[in-house]
Length: 365
Ligand SMILES: [Zn+2]
Ligand SMILES: [Zn+2]
Image (cartoon, rainbow, N blue to C red; front, side, top):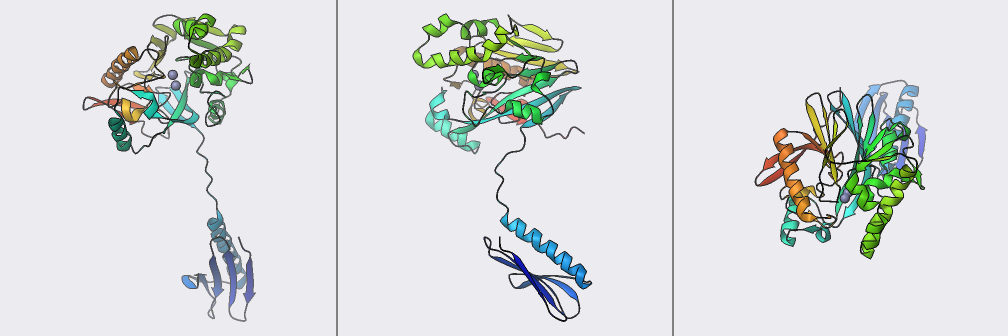
């Protein structure tokens, strides 16, 4: 940005400022009658009131400063803090963004033809790879602070791993979290449990279903897995081990009420012990469905489309169809780990499938 200069005549004065990058010349002048003028690129754009010389000089300097600063402002290129609140009666649900990562859906989705996939992406104004959100959810019941999934930590690179920072931005501290409910032990859901091998949530008890723990925390299962799948076991073990060692890990079996109004429901298919959690309070409910689905642009319209991450794609499709039908009929809130942030809304039937209706923005006042 260039600097300004000033000169004044007996009955007229000019302040000139230019911004080198934008090549804009802005002048303020006072004419023979003492009337303030603003001139941009030689064009008179504003006549002001007759003011004293000192007054207009100050005003002119402020105008010039603001105009030059605007012309030079660089894009900030940073998103708003990643949290969003939804009230469930007087319970507070805070969506927490862990970040996003590029998902090559052409390589991952199954049961869909390439032309059908292209058409679905185009209908949603998306391109492959799709920028996929990773979300966790914090439920404040008044008595307990419960976190559902923890994001990727360091497992998926620097575009994710921001959940703890966004939890702080949302007005909470990791040490305040009482309980963590894990939908399943894929790295993008458990990675945020640890940082530098230590527990991020030192006072929290981590809960997961027994079949999930039995699979991912089993050395025998890891040894039996193909080479390319062993990394997933190592991630799960490294994320959970500090909590196991501290006596802060518990499993449950079958449908279980973990807290009054917070229920775990088996949803095995995506992984051997994938679990959804339902919070019900004051006549409303929200279903935290983890990885029940991944790609909104495709799987709402056609729930039969599966993803290569599914442990049992046939079972995963059946679970998806059942839960979609239930939440649409019951008009429950749904909260998804990979729905576009803040990842909370409703489902309605549309054609042979469903449409997702994102939450209407609320200022909570
Ligand atoms: Zn998963
Ligand atoms: Zn996931």
